[in-house]
Length: 270
Image 1 (spheres, rainbow, N blue to C red):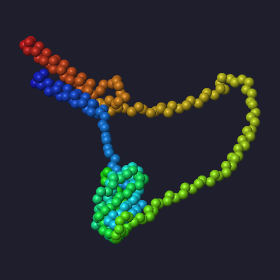
Image 2: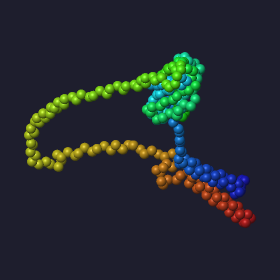
Image 3: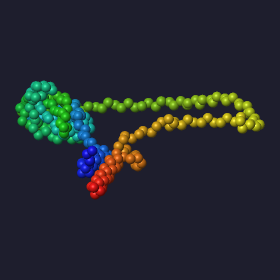
């Protein structure tokens, strides 16, 4: 029978040690924490401007006034205004794209603040239509504002004033106090009188034992951990997979030494 040389078992020993190292690394990776971060995208545009009007007009200029919207609806502060004017009525389509964009629009103020902007370089005695949109930092653009119109003066100096229509807030209804009626107190129902029962003596055998409360955990077995995998609450006890691999590696070394010793003894006897 062919003898097994001890040196032939060295690759097996190295393989078992490699398995133990890989398993310990997988345990470290398994218990590491993973951090996840995400960013919520802003999808709310500024509110539509509903009070755009021409306040005054001159020979070559008009002054617009409106109330600033917010960054998200009526909250916060927007980023940019886009003011445009045209000789014809402006809608949210081709006419908005064909309208002339004004230069030097003011920066938006916080929501609810009053703002104004003067457009110059207009023709005298001409009727113009004005509209604007608002954007935030994304940018999310608001709906087209209401359309304002005004006519520049023909000659002379100064400005023609236009009445500024400020929306009047709806009156707040005053609550009318309601009379508070006393709550009737319910009359407790009469309890029938109990007749006392006198017990003179009882034999021990006549006293009933109290019913035992069933154990809710009876019959429920504890979950078993996966073989080779130690959970966070398993702090000790039992043989883990890496211990088994190390034991096999040590056993392989002892077996190699034993075979080598027998072989040497055999050759020495011969």
